[in-house]
Amino acid sequence: MPAIELIGLEGLPEIDQRAELGDLIASAANEAQRNFVAGDIVVVAQKIISKAEGRLVKLDSVTPSGMAREIAARQQRDPRLVELILSESKRIVRMDSRVLITETRHGFVCANSGIDHSNIPDSDTVALLPEDADRSAQQLRSKLVELLGLPVAVIITDTFGRAWREGLVNVAIGVSGLEPLVDYRGSEDDHGHVLNATVLALADEVAAASGLIMRKSSRIPVVIARGVRYQVGDGNASALIRPKERDLFR
Amino acid sequence: MPAIELIGLEGLPEIDQRAELGDLIASAANEAQRNFVAGDIVVVAQKIISKAEGRLVKLDSVTPSGMAREIAARQQRDPRLVELILSESKRIVRMDSRVLITETRHGFVCANSGIDHSNIPDSDTVALLPEDADRSAQQLRSKLVELLGLPVAVIITDTFGRAWREGLVNVAIGVSGLEPLVDYRGSEDDHGHVLNATVLALADEVAAASGLIMRKSSRIPVVIARGVRYQVGDGNASALIRPKERDLFR
Image (cartoon, rainbow over all chains, first blue to last red; front, side, top):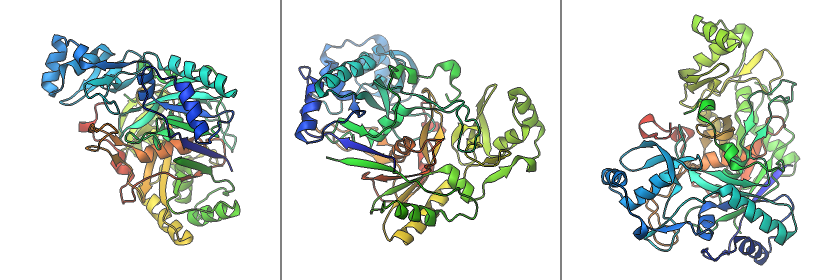
């Protein structure tokens, strides 16, 4: 029977900018007697990547623009937070009385440019998304491959809202070591019909699966996905961003 | 370590309208010596539900309207297929030269009202979505609980495209025995901050996870998700449809 296992990695310390994530992940797995195997996908929550990369910003250090002040007043939010949201975005997609949906510098469409302050010890501090989560994934993968002596892939995930459907799901914002999309176009189903238009977002399905373990309030920012069939490759998460001209779902 | 296992159920026969899915699933699991345990989520591909419920339509039996003919001519598709897509929809969201994105009678937004002809033996036949996949899930769950003597939940999935992101993912279109959304609003993170606006789409994450095994071209239309923490309840998949007035992502 084909089977996939998702294993939540417990025992990681609070992550700060001095943290060497690769070392910490390898030793937490070792400690828990959960050895990695070749082909494992190491799924990592964006928050600890941001912490390790020093992407925390003290609101004290932010001077809000006039536009940030105006939006903040309408939304009854901190103008310094709104300033950060705007400065991390290319454009505002929509806004209401509570939230800004933006397109981030990376091209992701999400609430508040992915900035939040959950799971951060200091209440006056927020975490930005990694500058380049594909690069972060690549660096972490190199380190893990070196430490473990095994080929593994890395996916960095964040929790995004969606059009048309209620509730947030984990998606892939950084990928290394696997092709995030699986292209079935031109292949045949079991009855010999050609399957057209079928490209599956494998990296997002792995991210969503890990979200079942990686809950906000529990201390499990790393999930090992074992048994997933994927194509090794150098694709990255930017391939998951759908360009406007190809997007009929907006 | 918290862990989740996803087990693909092999050995199901080709499903037709005479099929008793509950019996077939229970005996395939038994055959494979994969006993169910209390709390398992049985994730089932929409296609076999539609087949078992006789939701297959021979294109020969369809008379296309003028509108269907016109769209079909523009898209170089079969006008009878377009007729079915229109008749299963409440409205057309968008269309281009190849596809119709519709809002189905159920309220789902997807390509071609969820109609396709992959994995159907007869090349002149297509499968419609179940009439009411929540009801289908409920009936299957009742049957499985009766046969197994264990509490299990059921999720029926289909593969949908999305706004903003490339690639299809599996989502939940029918749910029985669990609450599809997990509401963390008002709860605290590990540092005592209140997590606002965090409602997770658990049923969609389970569906996406199952998509990693349930590939179009492989004969595994049923996945057992074991170890998922969920709230038992009588929520259904219609709770996953976001009403327009609350949707800032469109």
